[in-house]
Amino acid sequence: MAVLFTGIQPTGFLHIGNYFGAIKNWVKLQHEYESYVSIVDYHAITVRYDTGSMPHNVFEMATGLYACGIDFDRTNLFVQSEVPGHAELTWIFNTVTSIGDLERMTQFKDKSKQNRENINVGLLDYPVLQAADILIYKGEVVPVGEDQVQHIEFAREVSRKFNVRYGDTFPECKALLTETPRVMGLDGTNKMSKSRENYIALFEPEEEIYKKVSVAKTDPARKRRTDPGTPQKCNIFSLHGLVTSEEQLEEITTGCTTAGIGCLDCKRVFVENLMEVLDPIQKSYRDYSSRKKEVKARLRENAEKCRAVAKKTIVEVKQRMGLTPVFSI
Ligand code: ADP
Ligand code: TRP
Image 1: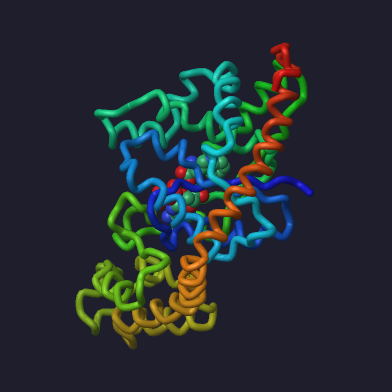
Image 2 (image 1 turned 45 degrees about the vertical axis):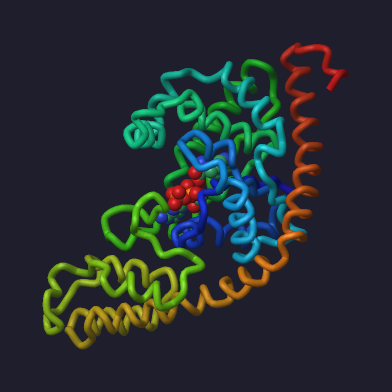
């Protein structure tokens, strides 16, 4: 069975961009691949964070992922810093990586702008750690949202460079996208993201979601209820695509272009359809939240399994690189 690897930062909560852009795929693909999903706390510390909230955030992320359908027995869900091999392989990969390539990464440029007072080496090295995450398990398939594609291509380059220098060791990994790899935020201009106030959280109650959606921008041409609109220019219509059937999309298109329905009617249908997906996930979230011990025990066991796999790769890598004595590990 080919290996699937992906990661997510423990930044508090999940939003529907994460779900429809990535997690939905992880749930589906866990039946087809040997699956590893990591809560990447070592990535999260490359920006300033609250140490007191970190343990809670890590646990919340695990609970949230299980609620979305990540299966206890099908996916190795684990916490990155529990497996030291990731950091070890990062160091090794640093020596086949050029600084220029890292400086050109879009996420590094964006985050450097946002965190001018803390442009640390970890922020620059972030993609190398990500490559180590994937390749330490010899991951081939990496399901992510569109914003991560550049990092996965970078990981493929790292694998190639290592193989050329030290012999064939790592596979070439590739990104796998969902049908909606870039879910737009409620502001209609940026991708949905935790760092922007433009998200619908996965575990938000329906009333809160409706409140946010009801004030979200639509086609600017529809100033009054009687003005006809163009669905393709409306952000809510693009969000409908996540949860609404083809048939209902056609009805909405007709309603919008003839001003037969108003934006609020359209928004109400969206929230109704969204809640059909979110209701069972929210119920499951409450269930897993009350099984804290079980979730923690599972994370511990999984980390142990991962350490064993990681160690094997590190031994192989050290042997190829002439780093001795390998028998002491
Ligand atoms: P955020 O950008 O909100 O901080 P993360 O960086 O933790 O989210 O992303 C976790 C996963 O969700 C990644 O695979 C990422 O590509 C995906 N993802 C995040 N936001 C979106 C979005 N708006 N549309 C599609 N996928 C997304
Ligand atoms: N950088 C990814 C993000 O912010 C998270 C991540 C870390 C990851 N390691 C990974 C994703 C390995 C895929 C594979 O979303």
